[in-house]
Image 1 (spheres, helix red, strand yellow):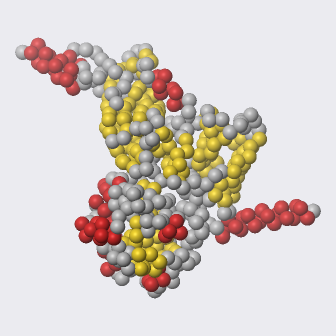
Image 2 (image 1 turned 30 degrees about the horizontal axis):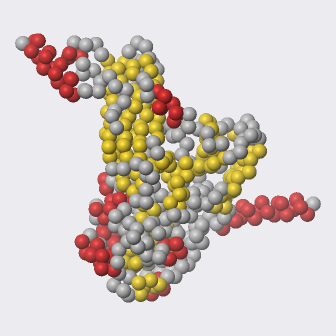
Image 3 (image 1 turned 180 degrees about the horizontal axis):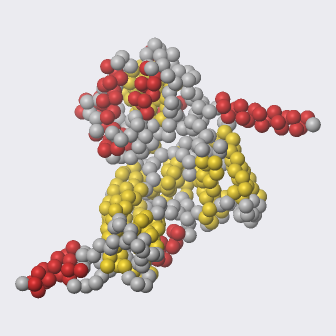
Length: 206
Length: 285
């Protein structure tokens, strides 16, 4: 008797857990819950912490300049366009490079700044994470991999940049951009309709 | 004058179609991979079907991807340009293997792979393309163009694409090509449909999947490997805990970090003892 009650309880628990965990990442990141803080050097040697930006929305972009999926979004000007649009609106855009030294996409501060200049990129900071600390903290798998954090430091979006997995620039116009979609829903005070998507791209070169 | 023109057109057709009678294109060398199209018939018949295989041969240690690429990557794709009356199936995916990279797991193919597609020739509507008519011959041909694209990876990835063209003659009697053996090697790795009595899936911190097949396909299985077809459902890099007996299999695997909600249809491939694959699919609502 006891056994069957506990079995029923277990099943009930299983189903309710299903709800609670519905938007949880395996890495412990939960949509609408606080995003983990980090402190890291940017490409100019300045220490940058997530909590410095409390009160502002923050967009994290994992990047690797040699990855063909990243080249799709920079070669077309799509990524720079998003950076300009959102930093002009007063948001903070952090490009994160988690490639380990010796791996594809690894750059030092000077090379990162040179890339920003030649690509006419407009991030607020380029964060250098060669040990992969922030990358692993956020469970970043691919480049690009995008995250949106709101004014209260809650995670509101994580996943792909858009809906078409390809390296063709011509697909950008046909795709739904998940970052702009989430940002406009947030601006309208609506819940983010697609708060977690399957990021596509090159694996992060930890 | 007439014979003069005929000579020109013979010369032209010889120039334009050097591989008219071959059931395969030569390998095309692209960055870190060679690709070609092969056909399992030398002569196709109206009202029947035949197979075309896209063969990819990545360089040693490089790989290409299955329909669900796993943690990163991109599936191989082909878009066909076909004459009226000829229609192509989806790719009949051979089962993949797991390819680790750092903490990630991808699903794909290291070494050569042939991705078969079934071509059906509609008897009533087939409109063969024949460029040999001018030469006075009665050859009827099907012109097949496949635009293939892929991502080939080792520690880095390189996207590639190629347009491959084949011409298959139409005749009264189907004639198999030597490449039929090569294509069939991979047709055998296509999953059989696994009819289910029931399928259950529960999402908690892990995903628990339970399948009840109509037959005891797992009875003597020593090893089973699971490849989800849905993306963003199971964490590819997490180990699956599997128990099976006769017609039942239970799989527990960590939920994907990209999981948002339970898909309407859950499907996957189970590979028994590295040789026989079964594909299941069921609705969750």
